[in-house]
Length: 277
Length: 269
Image 1 (cartoon, rainbow over the protein chains, first blue to last red):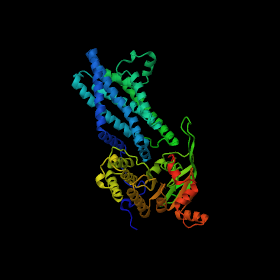
Image 2: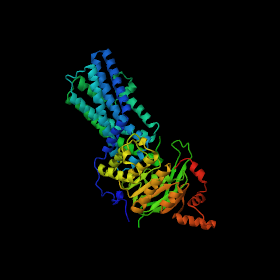
Image 3: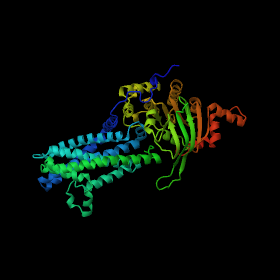
Image 4: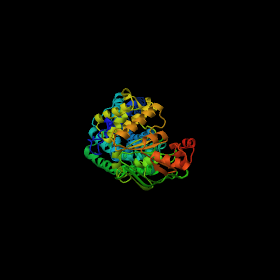
């Protein structure tokens, strides 16, 4: 019998060479999508830059010392909110396209799938933030003399862990509801913006909201990065905050994964992975 | 010999949402069957009869409420990872990232399954060539491809990881006659010339009769008949005392639905 060459021989599962680093699938796919939606990308980046410039110019009206304070807020919030947003967005996108069933049918551990999206979000966030920083420096002629830039970067990277954890929790929302999930994640994001002292000290908040700011990792991130860049705080001075942020991240990532797994099980019980959109 | 797919008393009910505003739907109400190795097994039934629900259970995408389903001896709930290594699926709606090209979508699948890209590309091009898909369109975005072409890419995607079981959920529904015939001919070749086990759901009686070794008819979540197309027709012919019985007659007799009504049902599959 003549056999179909493309399927000859049928290889038993596991006998074929398998590629490692499967999480690269998510990174490559997401960057390919950016390339295809380049028009949207230009609009988002443009809006992001103009928004940050407006905030910075408010600082100019308040006196020179306020500019860097607000610029740090705009930059850090831009990075952290992007991490958070992208994780929910990727799941949402797959639900609209109907590909989530195919991604979840692949023999890939769910943690690999989620970490692939996280890794992409970090790389993408760093690129966008670097571009934003470049433009702000160009317009405002910012000086970072005496700043502990390395310390600020360490704080940023470590705080990324806790935001990945929060992003994993937010990523369950589009699993629960295609139509309302991503929108609900914006509410979550907005509350963090309000309580974390992104553009003001948390001391100005009413007492009941201020107590919430203790729970937000962004509060500690911003405080530590401002200390490093505005006051030149040393690594020794930053160490307690770095350890705290690392601790929050170490707790939040497994919690985020566990919550996502629960949501996936719920979706498989109720049939919610089915295409919608 | 151990069956490749086996279902025992599989039940699935959708409860109508958290607020229970909709009536519960009993999508699967005690499904039992076995599929043999290398067989092309057909499942036919009206819309809403439970075909796609069953495919989702076998694909590890849906938990049954009760009963057990096994693929190659692995329980689909307890050993989903092992099952996923062995199966692939083509669904009625070719789900892709529409802005990405055919190759970008296939490349994503290849990476998910850990298939080296060079091998994946060659496999995909070979399958697509046999399906009559021009290699020139390989880098075109999916939204620029016709429905038939998209479905051919879906078939190529399903074969990129060399599965042992291919789940085809109405793969030719909505295709133009030429594409339909090309996909059917390819399934026929897979059936005749490989060891692949094929599980095919369809509305098309011609497909069921010509592609499948055995056919099960499902209605309201229950399998109401299971045999070779020839035997199913013979049983009804004997009952009616007539030689001129088609598989469609068998379908209509057993599901008690007019074909037009069945087609017009809300898609609750």
